[in-house]
Length: 104
Image (cartoon, rainbow, N blue to C red; front, side, top):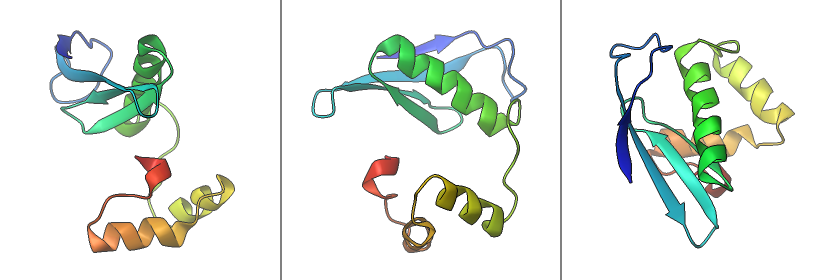
């Protein structure tokens, strides 16, 4: 499912509409919501939860919420706090491959 939705609170280039895809994954039994314009996505057990999480992810991505991570050291520190191996993320990024399974 894909739809244009109003996004009057966004500071991105085209705040009047967004291309959002909403997909059910029967294997993981989760909904994924993706802002196709920004390339930002999120998942949730329900459509509503996936869309709420997407709103938060977009706000973080656009700088409307949270603090930016500007250096590899800051990113590494955050990944370690979250229990994520920074070397896996870095290797995946450098190889141009998919991120680790848990980040998809």
